[in-house]
Image (tube, rainbow, N blue to C red; front, side, top):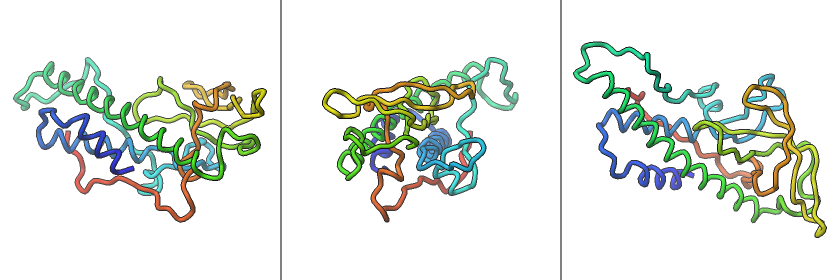
Length: 211
């Protein structure tokens, strides 16, 4: 996990021209991305929020960088124009989105590979059941956000292998909806894919970020 994150950070900002404070800010955002990944699912949670490393560390979900708004105001004491500050923030988001897409891809591949080599294989008949909670691959979600779903129905092919799943999930507006997805677009949660006794990796930084 940490090696994958370091590799993605190097490929994303290895040649970027950043000040020390800018670098610390981006690392803090990377920390948020890593610690917002769903480890498991709390059935008793009224808000149906996944159990993440950040909730285990500080008891709540961490917040990412603010979005860039045209009406944001800046103090006059800065020796930089408002347009330059906006351009810098947009540059931050470009770097972070690049990291997010690269790391998410590696993370999902790792989840898939880990589960494939475990006794529970998603594509074998009878190995997954109605009610299991899975991670749904969704390219449209904002950076650092994940979509969980509960499997309701399994669809098998003529070879008796499971090829598709009906998943109950929440729409972006918060409404309950049912989706049908191929098995290749669903991933087990990290705890279910981790062997017993293996520690869960969490990312932390020592100092608070400066923006």
